[in-house]
Image 1 (cartoon, one colour):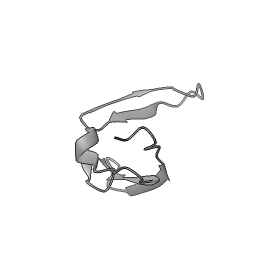
Image 2: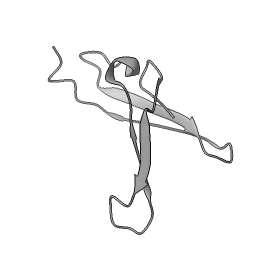
Image 3: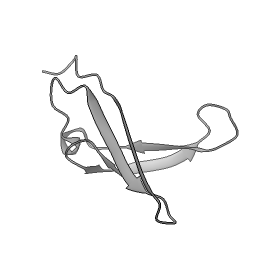
Image 4: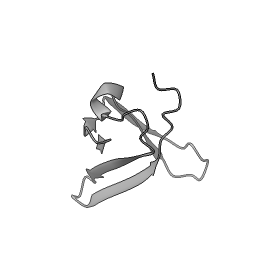
Length: 68
């Protein structure tokens, strides 16, 4: 997995059923500075591939309002 314009690699990941649907959800953490998200950015992307090689990507809103 890679996150943000800087392409940060996950430093920790595990799965847990966060939404209680019976399916494990992936939880990943990324180093803030490596992600390259800047003050004023409104979206960030996540890219990667599954163990079988299928590519995945997604984009969602980020909140940089507490950025200094």
